[in-house]
Length: 211
Image 1 (cartoon, rainbow, N blue to C red):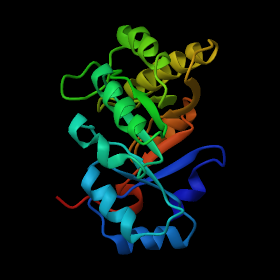
Image 2: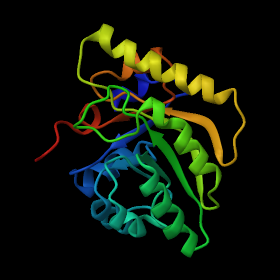
Image 3: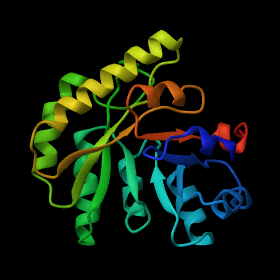
């Protein structure tokens, strides 16, 4: 996995293993990779049952409220907190088991209708809702930026880092700005330059995704 040599030690790599067979995950595991990302709840749970217990599973896809219960006891970090309704469902389902969910707030930084996430102006409402929770801890921010050229990519990554830094200076209940999850196979180098400390790479590790 030569990509490991291109990622600084202070940046965490999530290997996006969605649609990939268990055998390929084991190959990555055997050379030291421990963080893997899935975008379908059923696939994450099925793979978790077949693979070593010390793997940290990241849920990175659009999370439907009716699937939240299956992530209890199965997920290390949910990257895609995208609405207050979803927050309330996570609080409820993890609360039933007296557990705490670690999550990232997904911001729709490019304001794309095709993507999930809250808009910047909705952040304060989300923060207020999180502060009332007992079973959800926000660990940072995640974005999926619009497809574009390098200059456009830098703009969106830089804007997200500004938001991250502004929030980091404030004190909240249940919220700590530790993780900035941005950047994928085609733009992770720019994302790192702009401040990402977690990148999500799929085809750069496993090859093109199977349909």
